[in-house]
Length: 102
Image 1 (cartoon, rainbow, N blue to C red):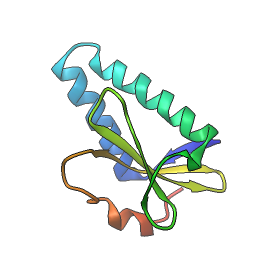
Image 2: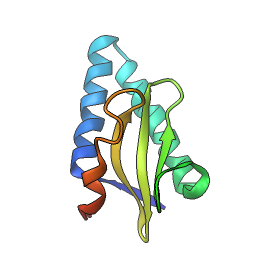
Image 3: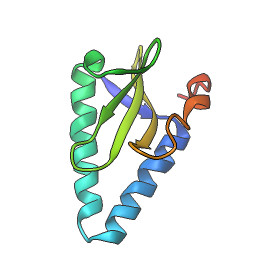
């Protein structure tokens, strides 16, 4: 199972990589590695994480960063709706659930 980004989520991902890399050299790469490892786990078991918003939007938190992957399962994989900070602007991404991007 593969994943694809909502365009705004892809921008958040790239911003996060840039932010962490500019903070500490190598931290952006560590973020990418953890993100990819979690995305792989989600691919294997998309229903394993807690439902954030009924009926099908889930939150998978990263371990070493205060961010979560907000996603929903699709026929062709899973769609990442947001790379959301765990303590800032809760559910700011809500309008994205109704926008269907491939």
